[in-house]
Length: 568
Image (cartoon, rainbow, N blue to C red; front, side):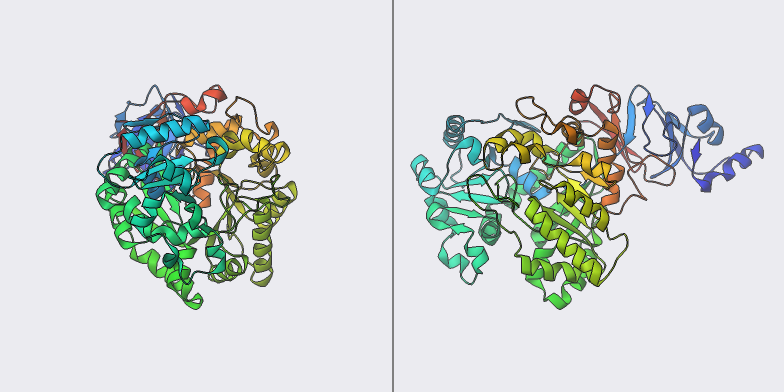
């Protein structure tokens, strides 16, 4: 039996007939997957208020806590550590749920279902149908478009569909927008909007085709957010994403690089930061926003101040953690690739290399953990060079610099990651969603097969977690496990079979390794005394069920800091 040392006195107190005065609840289960050592430590867990105090069999726990309440609601189910959504975006996910989704895969959300569109004809038909049902006279927004599935898209094409409804097509990556003429006129998207922008930004704006991407899309956000995140619609959309994440079994959700506009954060704190939310919602600062608002000499201290300013009972910004961006989006094929693209287009930088170096050094020298969006192997090469340069200049131990997404890499880069003490937060959905199309378009089969090298990371003893980057993938940890274990593409073929990992490795990647990636491993990620009482209750054991069924395991309930939240 594992027991919190502060309760060891109870065994002696029993001999003196002294009863503990604190309230303890013992949850029983069919199987308890603790991810602690020793692994098989019982089927019951004792909880005092918000913390785990002991793990063992029911008889042993009752002998130590004779006055404990026994909760048998999960006696026929499997309890695993609370599942962690290590990298999701409440803003993007909620906004996506509030649009007409026409995407490359089915999307099932609370109260809504959007079947996939996999051909240009199907996409156009669904778009015209959605426009015919658009009421209220406002801007029409659809998320999910992808050129490789849905064909070309432009201002001219959209004008041919409607000149009376302002249309915004939000590309599947979330990093691109395409407008019809009426939308551009109503929103004020014109050359004057981008006056004073750098050449890097202007190169990612094509007003003739109504198309903005990467830095150009970021420069357009001041015009888009009042439409996309209308507070009247945004709060109900957040309520839907809250239900979605709860149904997925999440007990902890983190957004790296979220926007910090006061009105936006106030709404998110009101919905996700309130007591009674079935998961904790935390945030990591965005380096780009800090750079826009502060001089480089004050950027790290400004991050400290912002992290201290925002927070609520259920939400906070992590101190000394920041999100940075290197190359472009994988869903747009705008990542920077060492060997380029088969069709000779080029990738993009989300942050110019010179600016990236300056930002990275400022946060590195101030002791920040730096999370870095990266998708292409050229982008990864650049990031590894920057980390190595800073390690030589200012050596740091346990810096936990995190490569985020980890789309394309080489075996040599995996070895460098291990040598530099870097960790990885990977999106295992990439091979599943993109492996087939990218084998035929832009990338080729050899590189497409090697996306997201999880087995190589494991062999190199690199700590890695899994994330969805919701809405880039469904924000469901069990689905992410399924992707990493099976790597089945849309046609049922295994993409890169040698990069599959075991169910145990996958479960660790959405629990204890996810906690490690955000410096929370002392508080969560496994079921052992002294940690928060965060559990996910499942109908079946993901470690022993048929691996093809992991994503279909029913979530029965979550326990968050000792409070039970049954599925609605």
